[in-house]
Image (cartoon, rainbow, N blue to C red):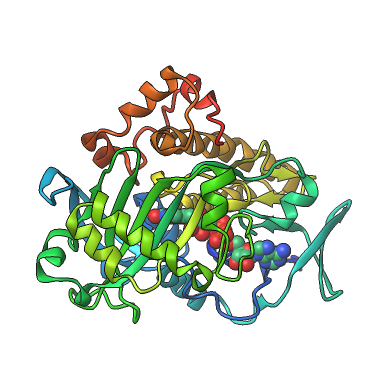
Length: 421
Ligand SMILES: Cc1cc2nc3c(=O)[nH]c(=O)nc-3n(C[C@H](O)[C@H](O)[C@H](O)COP(=O)(O)OP(=O)(O)OC[C@H]3O[C@@H](n4cnc5c(N)ncnc54)[C@H](O)[C@@H]3O)c2cc1C
């Protein structure tokens, strides 16, 4: 009798779900351990897709006909500050949401393998067995442990304590508004495209996503915006993350705790700086939220022979490449392909790392290039002129949320570290 191999997956979001789906199809037994105590739906907003994401969904046996996954747009537009279209480019793309993908991936998993309320504390490894130890005192062992526990990964923090996220010097105001609440003119201008407004040193982008009930019918969808603004760490960021009770948060703040005065000021800035269509979107968004932009790069994805890091636990790129979910899916696929081609797990993990480490670094470098002009502090004139290349409307339409330039990301540019203040 063949003994089926067992994988312990830490984190039940995108990376964890893709890994679980693919390992089950490979014939492994799988347990997913998620620290949240209930459904994760509702987290985040819009997610841009890339063709590679649909390849992995297919490998999971999921029929990804466009209408099921998200909203299709035909192309991109740039608006000037008077609201006139000053650039247009054909670029068909499907825009989905975190909640929609999560629901599809979770619903198609076999029953009883997804476990809520398991907060990993430590991992240990003896020769051929790796064990996850949880906060409630329970432990689970397997042949392989997959760290899919996100940017603040507990797995990574234990095994690579010096690899930590880096605040990059700007934040994003984000939000969602019901399409039906927008004026006809704004809906017409924005809601069938991936659109931009480009005040100096900043970037506003937006696109339609499914409605709250996951409807993709025009009129029932929502419009998702992301507005990147410089925020020096010691003063602007600190102020933005000081909540309505006067408590300072490190890198994120619960949306309902954002001080109303800050939201009012942000809306006034939107009126002053953005194309009027985007200013209307901001004005009509009931609960905007703030995201401090960070990036993270690991030197290794295979640890101690039986532990793999995937998704945001390994690499977090600034969002300009829109690649986080596609990269998490691709990591899971590469891991499972390696495990299917080599039966020795440590050798398979080496093969996985050889396939994905360079790609993860290239994504990080590319996203740094695209976002550099928004940093609160850029160090040299050379860096500034390089950053300027990526802030022209044509370049922004061509490069944002695409995989263009990732494979041939040039090392010299990428190696520059633009320290954020
Ligand atoms: C502004 C912005 C815009 C973005 N836009 C896009 C986009 O357009 N397209 C795109 O593809 N991506 C986008 N992303 C990135 C995307 O959301 C992430 O890359 C993706 O969710 C990563 O999935 P993950 O499973 O690796 O990590 P996460 O989604 O962070 O999940 C980690 C999971 O692990 C759990 N966990 C953490 N610690 C523990 C523990 N100790 N024990 C048990 N469980 C634990 C967490 O609760 C969580 O459920 C964007 C991100 C930002 C900030």
